[in-house]
Image (cartoon, rainbow, N blue to C red):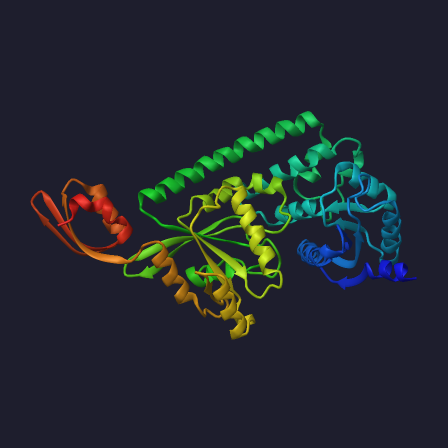
Length: 432
C-alpha cells in the first residue's frame, strides 16, 4: 500500500494554459531520493520552457531509478504508466527532461503512440521560433541538423512531420526528409555561412578596438533580468518577457558614464541548466562577444530559490566557451523581491557583488560606479603634445576621453584632456 501511495505521488496532474492546442505531459528521471528536489526544480523549468513554446502542461510524471533504462530511459513498467496518464489527461505530446537517445525516443513513441521529444529538442524549437537575424537562424539550423542527423535511421515519417507543433520547426519541416548525404552537405554549407558571419563580427570587434571602445557583456541564466537591466542602462528597447530565451541575437548599445566616459554594453542569450552542447557549439560565433568582452556582468535572479545552481550553470557554460577567466561583476538582480536582510546577506556572501533592481533602478548607479572602477575608467587630467600629422592618435584621444582644450601651433597640436588611467601608458611619450 505504501509503495502504491509513493507511486501515485510521482504523478502530478497540472493544468497550465500555454496558448496552443498541444497538451504536454512532462516526464522526469531522478537518480534517487537525495536528488528529488533538484529533479522537481528542473521539471518546473521544463514547464516554463513548454509554455514558452506555446503548449500547455497537463501533468508531470517522475521516476526514481539509479540508472537510466537503455531502451526507454524510465523502464518498461513506467512507460505503461505514462501511457495510462497520457490517456487520462488527453496529452498529445510527451516531453522528457533528459536527452533521449534515438532508440529511446523511437521506443517510447511507438509504445505510447504520441509525439515524444526531449528537453534538447524543445529548446531547439524555442530557438527556432525566436531567432530573428540571419546569423541566429543559421546557428539554430546547424544545431537542429546536428541533433537530427543520428535520428534519421529507422524514423521514416516520424522525422518528416509537417503538421506543426513543438519539435517540428525550422529544418525539421523540410531538411530531414532528405538522406544523410544531403543533410551532411547542408551542415557543411551552414558552417561555411556561419564562419563568414563570424569573420564579419570579428571585423566589427577589431573596429571597436581601434576606436578604443570598452565592451561590457551581460551574461546570466535565462529570465534573470538581463534585458531589463540592458534597457535600464542603455534606455534601449530590448524585448522583455517572462518567457525563456527572449534574447537570442546579441544587442549592442552605448552607455555614457559621465565625464566623457562611455562603454558598449552587449546583451546576450541566456544560459540554462542542461543547455544542449550542440547549441553552445552552434552559438560560439555569437558567444565570442562574451569571450572578447573587457568585463562581464553576471546577472542573477537573487530571488530564485536555486540561485547557487543557476550560478554554477552559467559558470559551466562560460568555461566551455573559454570565458572563465574574464573579469566580472556579480549583479544580484530583482532586489525588489527580497527583504533587506536577505539582500544584505547575499552581498556579504559574494564579495564584490552589487545588489540592484533593474525594474525600479535601485542600485544601478552603484553598479555603474563598480563598472567604472573595475575598468580603470577613472579619469586623469593630462596635457598631450602631438605632431599635426598624427591624426590617428589625436582622434583616439577624442574617442576615448574628453578634450578640454585644443591648440594648434605650427606643426604641433596640444590637447588638454581627461583620459581613463588605463590608457595613459599608450600616450606616455606625448605627456607634457
